[in-house]
Amino acid sequence: MIRIEGLRKTFHSRGRDVTAVDGVDLTVRDGEVFGVVGRSGAGKSTLLRCVNLLERPDAGTVTVDGMELTALREDQLRTARQRIGMIHQHFALLSSRTAAGNVAFALEVMGVPRRERAGRVAELLDLVGLGDRANAYPAQLSGGQKQRVGIARALAGQPRVLLSDEATSALDPETTSATLALLRELNQRLGLTILLITHEMDVVKRLCDSVAIMRDGRIVEAGPVNELIARPGSELARDLFPLGPVPELPDTTVLDVTLTGTTDESFVSTLSRRYDLDVRILGGAVEPLAGTRAGRLRLALPGSVDRHGDALRHLRDAGLTVEVAR
Ligand SMILES: Nc1ncnc2c1ncn2[C@@H]1O[C@H](COP(=O)(O)OP(=O)(O)OP(=O)(O)O)[C@@H](O)[C@H]1O
Image (cartoon, rainbow, N blue to C red; front, side, top):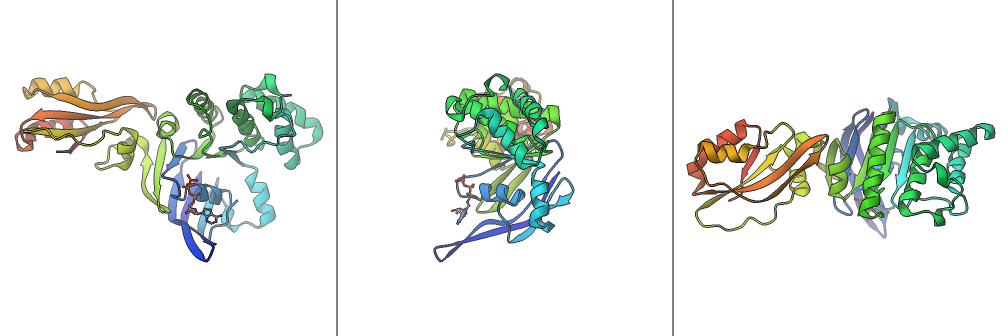
């Protein structure tokens, strides 16, 4: 649905060059929720803004729904952009217009005839659960409601793709949760492909099918969430399920074990029984993730690692990713 190839963007400011996006290749499949995560300054916003060409890349191509946007003229691009919705961290609503007025404005800009607008506005506000707040001004709405107006407006052009720029960063945890549930519902009901950027691991846990980690303008890890966390050394696994510093325990082997959807969660008791081991759980979490369950556990086994060859093999054969932390 979205294909990005060789994307590069450098800013020149105050006599200095900053390469915000430094050769990015990325594919977002039809109907998936794809998250780009990374620290502040990693280049996430620039990458997202290059997808609908709010920012013109210096090099590379962007293809959305089979159309190469980077090859279009400005007037063609304006039409193509209507099929790509976008929502923002601070909602970007017109304060002088009601919820309905904000959505109507988007339809107006797209050239939807006046007589069709009211009906479409009502449908869109219903879709995001705001049918009863149509006449409220942004100042009279909560953050979550404002974001719903933003989502309704983004859907005005019946887009196949929604871009989300930190859409929940300004919301409290409960409102974040409701907004993420709405985005998931829209993804499933409308088959909407969502490309989002976030620094919140909770958004990844709740919403994303696939993830890319960005650092210094480059993608350092990318793929379906479940596949990615099962890779030894995965940064995503560490970020989603942090285990903290490895404790120094005398005559003990410390294992960090990653479980994904397919793992039998009774593996700790099996390990203990089969190898007659006193297995301790030092920390970790197992949670719903990407439609299944996944997590990481830190285990302590008595004695040095060379005693545990068979036990480690058993865990790996059971589909777990096992890293010897100490
Ligand atoms: N318009 C601009 N002019 C100059 N430099 C810019 C511009 N936009 C972004 N940059 C620089 O490009 C780099 C990447 O910024 P970008 O906003 O894309 O990162 P980010 O990962 O989205 O960070 P954040 O989460 O803080 O928004 C930063 O060093 C930033 O200062």
